[in-house]
Image (cartoon, rainbow, N blue to C red):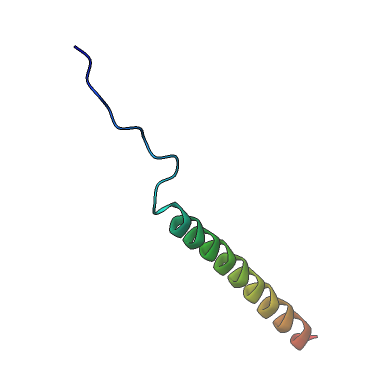
Length: 48
């Protein structure tokens, strides 16, 4: 006797939210690196 299994959904319902959170974290890291780079540049130029 075979059992009936419901088909798996193609995409998990929380996937778009997860993708948005990942994108936001990547942008936040890039913004932080840019800010740190700008501060280092500012301090290097200021001392010259």
